[in-house]
Amino acid sequence: MASSGLFSRLRHSSKSIRFIQNSIYSNHTTQSQSRILDNTILINSNNKNHHQSWRTCLLPILLAFSGGSLALQFQKNPSLCDAPNLQERGGRIGGKDSTEHVVKGTYKPVPPELIGELKAICQDNMTLDHDERYFHGKPQYSFHKAVNIPDVVVFPRSEDDVSKIVRACNNYKVPIVPYGGATSIEGHTLSPNGGVCIDMTLMKKVKALHVKDMDVVVEPGIGWMELNEYLAPYGLFFPLDPGPGATIGGMCATRCSGSLAVRYGTMRDNVINLKAVLADGEVVKTGSRARKSAAGYDLTRLMIGSEGTIGVITEVTLRLQKIPEHSIVAMCNFPTIKDAADVAIAAMLSGIQVSRVELLDEVQVKAINLANGKDLPESPTLMFELIGTEAYTREQTLIVQKIVSEHNGSDFVFAEDTEAKKELWKIRKEALYACLAMAPHCEAMTTDVCVPLSHLAELISKSKQELDASPLLCTVIAHAGDGNFHTVVLFNPEEDEQRKEAERLNNFMVHAALSMEGTCTGEHGVGTGKLKYLEKELGTENLRTMKKIKAALDPNDIMNPGKLIPPQICL
Image 1 (tube, rainbow, N blue to C red):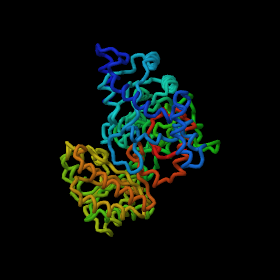
Image 2: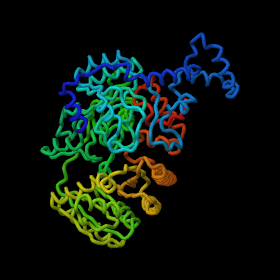
Image 3: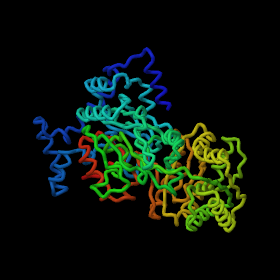
Image 4: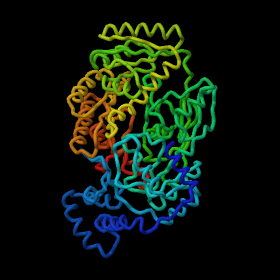
């Protein structure tokens, strides 16, 4: 990991960890004090000197609502609803119809006393170094940015460390942001309010492997690729395959999936139980190791996809699969992207047990050719993987070939050699890097819509028309077997017109997907980037329920604040 390497260099340098000095925070402190003064009427009603001004300002609110109890409830617990003037103060994160890619938060300096407590807990496994904090405050593959960065980065080595860190932060009401492989692209690891970044990458042990039960217990910092290297000698593998570098903890937090989800499901289908540290430092285990259970609320599924907003995951028990006896990877080309999508749908309806169905448009294939020195036909392309016995996979390959020929497909080829198959999936997995290499001075806005399979061809066709007409460089990559597709829109975020055009394309695809009973995010998660779409997709009642859960488990709102729940949702 880049972050681990950088921290290692810092730890072995002569520069010692320093306590916060007043000069570091002078500007932020002045701003914070100003914000507190601006908000006195809302949150300082117990101050006798402000009683008269408080009553005067509250009177029109009481008259407007004809129900003063609601207004008073917001004042007593302002965490249940963002303050009305929060956007003017520069504190609103995301929000309905927002087009900002720079996220603003409400900054409050971390008390030196908390830094001292963290030092006692973490010893040398923490840093105040600006470069390290900046690295953790800017996602590697996301155009989303935040005005602030974390004040301190800690590297716990155990669940007990995490519990103590979270409890200390809760005591001082300082926000925390969990951090894993840094591969998320929707601003999940931004620190718009400053605070403490909890880097989990030193917690990467395999704690127990149960071969006969086909499950494994791991710490959250281990990567899925590292885990599969460990499992291979046992004839087992973990079937989810998101971007290279993703860690198990982050995969749980974002409810990710990958190209194999069409056969094995998403993260929610492959986690048996987990352990998490709640906002008060308490450690909760969500279930037993049994493959099924009807005991109590399903806390495992509640934590999966919660994006660090209600707990920090410290241990995960995963369901494993046997490595297939044999597999075949097939590729074919089409004159249009709709033809390719139609074949993907037809293959799924035929009952063939495919493990992957990936679709690439001609622009993406060109990017792959340029980045890898390949000579693949630059036209819409489908990639299939079929698994089973040797005889079964060959039989299924012939069926796929027949379906392809009936839908204007051509250049049908397949590979059975192990190295050839690895190379094909490697270039697919590195598709984003290939896109970025085509436009090295640009950043990527990656969309993530997902629709019922029957609507996939229609949505891709409509989207492709918009993308081709755009002045921006855009590619299409789809997990076509489950209706999930991505577009990589390359733009210069410093160019206002380019940023607006990228946002327009993203909005078009999201709203088109929602009109087809789809979702704004099939596997990337919400973070700050997708907040503005949730009210339309899920409805206010759904989001209020989420906010009630958040308020009950995290009353001080320290757990990755500003993520997952839109700011306009009130209780």
